Length: 123
Image (cartoon, rainbow, N blue to C red):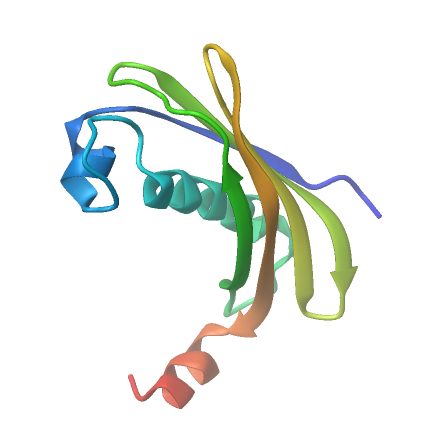
């Protein structure tokens, strides 16, 4: 299997802290923000595997948030494809800041036809 990997970065700001998004009371990088960055990295990594009219949708996310990141820190999320079973894509996801690892886990995405998926969703 050809290595499929992508790293996405963002800066911790007031808009993605736990106290702002409602997942906590402190002004540190929110777990939901880290999860979204990990998913974005996986979605971007999968882009080269898609055919005409296809996209990917997230199905499972099993992560641990290991330590906080403060406002101003740069957070990087990396997604590495570890398995492909038909339309099912499994990624190892990791996040870090300037001081090292802050999160890790696995993420599963499925390749779908965008038009058919939206029709099933009622949209």
